[in-house]
Image (tube, rainbow, N blue to C red; front, top):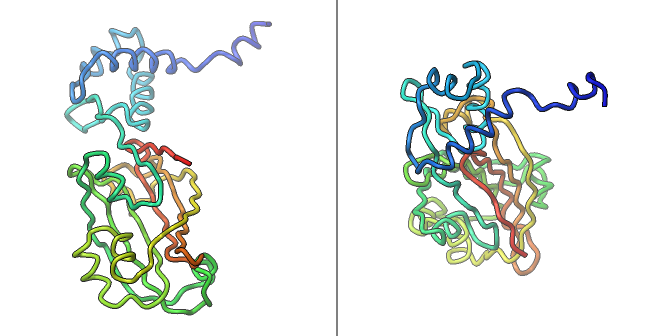
Amino acid sequence: MTMSESAQTAPPSYFQVKLELAELIGRLDEGMSLPPERRLAAQLGTSRTTLRKALAELAAEGVLRRTQGSGNFVAPPKVVRVRQLTSLTDDLEAEGLQPVSVVLSLEAVRADKTVAAHLEVRPGQRIHRLSRLRIVESEPLAIEVAHLPGPLPKLAENLAEKGSLYATLRDCYDRGVTSVEDTVETALATPDQAELLEIGTGQPLLLFHRTGRDRDGRVVEWTRSVYRGDRFRFVARA
């Protein structure tokens, strides 16, 4: 290999710093702070510019929490979401966590062509659109926008009583979800999403589209959800 080829394949300089930081973090407990950046850069023998790039990547991956004016702290483990025929509420409660839902909006709207195609209804048909902010341990973690076909009288009251959307659909409207199809991709937080999720604009998100069907194969929901990439990881089980 020539010198030029070696230079082309060598990892960026910050990557080694990132590895050393990860090793350091692995020896610390959750919530502990790292040394100040100036001292940390000297300790690792690197520039503060290179150090900050490595810190930024570790923060985006959920290893660190960066607080303006306070420093860098070891982040808690990511919340695990096991996507099965259950709701986010059910899944998180199974993890011993107590989720909170803040209803951002609940309105009857007419389905546009895209929504109608996912719900398998006619364009222009009236549906319910439910937007919620999902919070765990006082931290915003996800924004969910559910599109729900068919008449759903007193949906707001029933949802407030049940807490879980799936439990509401099953118990109040006999629309239990028996099969789902999920697609997942990555996205970057828009300014509006970043404000709700308390992250920076452009931070990585996990974007999920879910189509849920009842026992007769009818679409019960089409939901578009964004999750903070630094706080969630997903486990799929067959």
